[in-house]
Amino acid sequence: MLIDTHCHIQMPPLDKDIEGAIKRANQAGVYKLIVVGCDLELSRKAIGISENYDGVFATIALHPQDAKKLTDKMWAEFEKMAENKNVVAIGETGLDYFKEYSPKEKQIEVFKKHIELALKVDKPLIIHNRDADEDSIRILQEYKVKKAVFHCYASGVEFARKVWQAGYFTSFTGMITYPKANALRSVVEECPLECMMVETDCPFLAPQKYRGNTNEPAYVVEVAAEITRIKNKDLKEIEEITTRNAEEFFGI
Ligand SMILES: [Zn+2]
Image 1 (cartoon, rainbow, N blue to C red):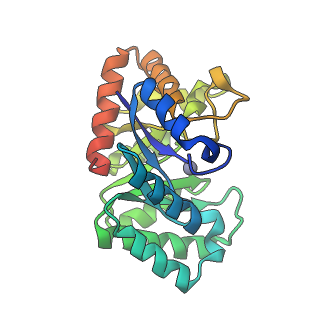
Image 2 (tube, rainbow, N blue to C red; image 1 turned 180 degrees about the horizontal axis):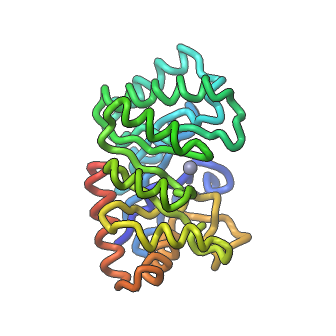
Image 3 (cartoon, protein in one colour; image 1 turned 135 degrees about the vertical axis):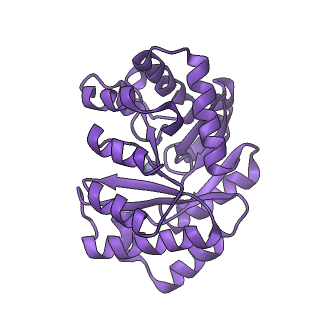
């Protein structure tokens, strides 16, 4: 059994057939899904789906790229949603200095609000980090955050060591199956089993085998298979460990 710890089945085109995506995931042995919110509407939809299907959980946040759009009214709604029992984490939040759609200072301010909220409701954080390695970990440590996952890990191995050292998780997507992703595969190779989770980040980042198609939760199997290959382990062991990590992390 596997868990897709980060999917956006409430986003187009997956939102047209949410039931089908969940069913295909279950048939592939993926019995739990974390549907991740990136704005108010997508967070609301994530909660809605989690209320309709067993094994489906939600998270809520405003993506760092939209940090500049945050209003007090919007935040009050996020605060309310954070208390929902089906909401198992705050995220994806963090910093994106690659695209920098919102100014850095604003991103940091909004990231801190999410951290404070996570601490208040005692839920873990899902971190989106692009080209912001040092700031993202520094801020988490300033707040003494204990539970965080660097989702869709795409930074180098040296930074990964700092993440693991801090007690945080790295989560891997279908990116690790791409022919050019050797640097990322060496991160997987070094990643302690107790620090890793698997995800699709669908509808984005379809694994190599399905590249060009819409990604979906069932394909997290490909991520686990690639980890198995890189680490030279049994698939069963990778399934068990990543699932246990996710269950403990999200409390599901
Ligand atoms: Zn995502």
